[in-house]
Image 1 (cartoon, each protein chain N blue to C red):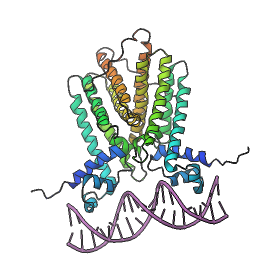
Image 2: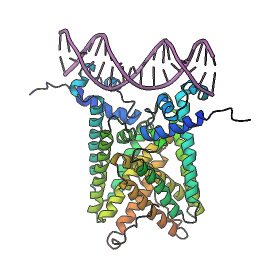
Image 3: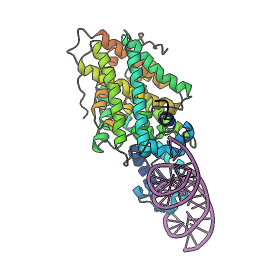
Image 4: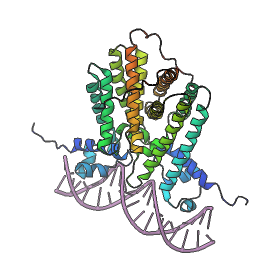
Length: 208
Length: 208
DNA sequence: GTCTATACGAAGATAGAC
DNA sequence: GTCTATCTTCGTATAGAC
């Protein structure tokens, strides 16, 4: 009872998420996490015996859970199209408020696949899977077929992540605005056709 | 006349592209580039007075031009939908052949935005712009309106880049296959409606 | 164009005191 | 839980010979 534990640990994980978003995985050193969080240097390996890898791992999980919550919150409304607009708006606002300095921490970890810690990439993959599942459930709930729901969910996550990378590089919201518009129309169209055209799935293209 | 220059320089740039794809920007050190290319250590700053930053810069430009050529080549056929399938197949094949070890070098540079070399991110942005322009021109050529063409181009690039990141993290082609299918159908639908439904543009969603 | 040697800083991790 | 060394490795960059 009573707070015997300090909050250093959670502050470090939170700071790691922030630094991953802004500077990428390799640049997120223990030193910078300590400076950013104000946590004491001496207790790093007390809290994280797995060292830097464990710290990044927990940051990925935290950020993954957070965004899964955002998806749940935005998509539970009556109109999934409106929820989708809000989902993209959350990302766009993050870009604008940071003046295009911050991106997605999961992408940062996924891209810097390190041979030393290969399982970090899989943690990132698990987070993406979770987000896809959340969107898939929403689309299914609104009457879309299983296959179509999964494809749309993959497209939404991929397009959002790709757009965020492009917006940062171009210092412009144009890519995510364009993507949001196209996804909006696509989802509206898919939902309007849900009752009759179900057995006309998109064919799998020959990726020859 | 006669080859007074060695090929060390271009081999270094080429190796840098490969290492960016596989390990990310920060992990692409001069040492690793030298090892990978077999170039002599002594001439690094002779060929690249701007040091590591110049090396990465030139790698971004090389990779950007290369993929722009791929887009031109695949999309110049009669059927842009078929060309799009091929475009995604190129990326999917790169993932499979490398067993999900390599991604996009432009994304690698764009994500690891470093305060030391902020203009690297803009070079990445310029490459993305070039790819978008190439797709936009193709869509316009096939009768789509300017706005729609730009939006679709942004979606294609964003979805491809996002899907590649997801595929690597999940060690699966599922995301890019799903994205390719959805983009295939979307493009086919857009082209089939191009003559009559032009003045019904997708509305810009309120990203409230 | 290429060599070796070296300066300098930053990183991850561990040891042992308190 | 936190502190202060300290070890080791690796990174960029430069100097000066050949």
